[in-house]
Length: 120
Image 1 (tube, one colour):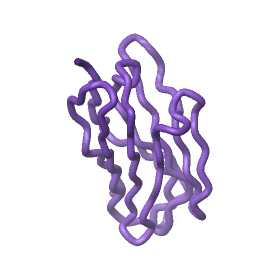
Image 2: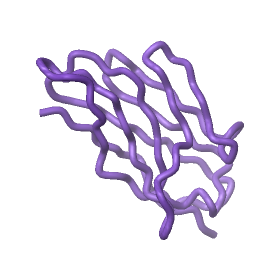
Image 3: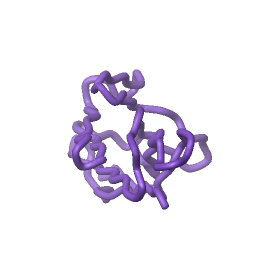
Image 4: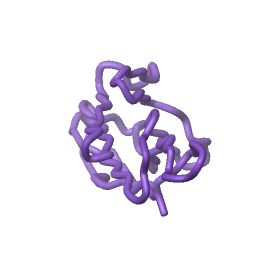
C-alpha cells in the first residue's frame, strides 16, 4: 500500500517561514513528479509548486521568489520551504505524487493535508 503523508504545517505570523514535508512510503518502484496544492476555504485546490524527478521546478506566480520546492529521492520525500508568508497563503496544503507502485501502473497519490495559517 502506497501513501503520502504531509507534515510541518502550523500557525505563523506574516513574514514568517514554515517548511512542509511530504513523505511517500510503501511498495514504491519509482516516483515521477511531485507537487503542492493548497486549498483555501471556499476555493479549489490550486497548484503552486511542481518538481520533476530530475529536479526541474515550476511555481505559481503568487509564490515565486518566496517558496522553494525540493526533493530527496533517496528518502522519497518532497519539501516546500515557505518564506515571507502572507495571510493569503492560509490554506490546507496537499501534496501530490505520481508514483509507479510495484506491480502497478503510474497513479496519483494525495496526502491528507496539513493546515497552514498565517495571521497576526
